[in-house]
Image (cartoon, rainbow, N blue to C red; front, top):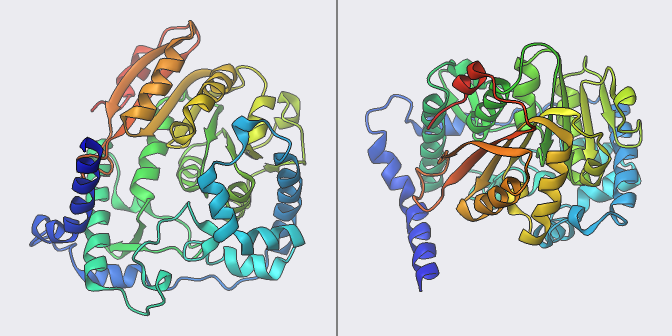
Length: 390
């Protein structure tokens, strides 16, 4: 009964959110449905000068998909992701396996709106997802209110340090969102920029390295790589996701040095000079000990089965010499990770807080951030002061 009440409340909160948005932003000049209409206009890039890039992605994917089958249970896809593969990802996985560059290009250049990004980009209620040409009025109010709440929360969490222009992103994959001050702000951009900013506060000046477990299509990594110099970024995810992230980030940063699966081994000497290293999940165990300054997971580790979390926590603590920032969707997953991490003698909790990125839609949705310090050395007081406090 208790669970049923929570689910019913969440359902009603989401259904009523468009009407609450109208009241909340009454008189706000940003609250115009035209800003959503323009934000959903097509921005597709029809250039086709990416054949070598796509060939490289296919080669890495084929090797990763083949070796994925023999990987430990910890690194196998969840049941939900397996269903995504079978139902929505078949066209893109087939194109990757067959090296069908033309078909892959058509999907990737439109990935925000194509099923090849299922599970990575929310499209529920969007016109093209339901065969309609125009967005329903109620969906427009939902997305407009959700976008503005996200932007306002971003301003609070970053203490107003940034301008709206800092949320700008590349025109790759036909993005959509809301127009603010004449600029497109993707729906996920405020959260992704916040995560990149928070990771930056945990890094010392000079060369640094970050490992993300479950980086999605690379939204957070884009802001981190754009705004942070002298950085080596590692991403560990499932083969289909890594393939899409490779496309997005390689198109966004053509001057950076990328390493994909099968091109080099995960050894310190092999990684020297690399800016971005994109690998399947099962390669996490091949990382040298204490090889990255900061590890990061947003919802990925907290969403795996409880019996598999210990392996992830062990691997993360082994490869990290600085901080591990974990954001979990709800207190259950956060508490499990907290318990596993603090069982280790070389880990201590620096901070735990509710970040509440979805709190405007339902008070039942609490995103919990936990920051861990790996190793015996003490925190730099200046660094501790820089950590965003709730």
